[in-house]
Length: 94
Image (cartoon, rainbow, N blue to C red; front, side):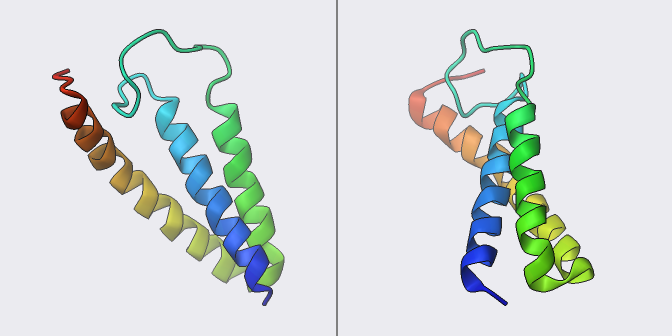
């Protein structure tokens, strides 16, 4: 197992999940304002796909998919809490 590929897969997975969260209209990471509406989920989806592709040969199919799903679920569960914390620090009361 190549540790560099696993780290790259994890970073791509975290980045992809963050980008998908930022594509949501109800997210609280950014300050309110206009955002691009068209094709905003594609970068996150591509990063998640890259993450799975990088993890697949290093871990094997079953281990890669389960580790990938756990990572995505963990980051997706924490993202709203980080957004609420950032909105509170900004003084935003949406």
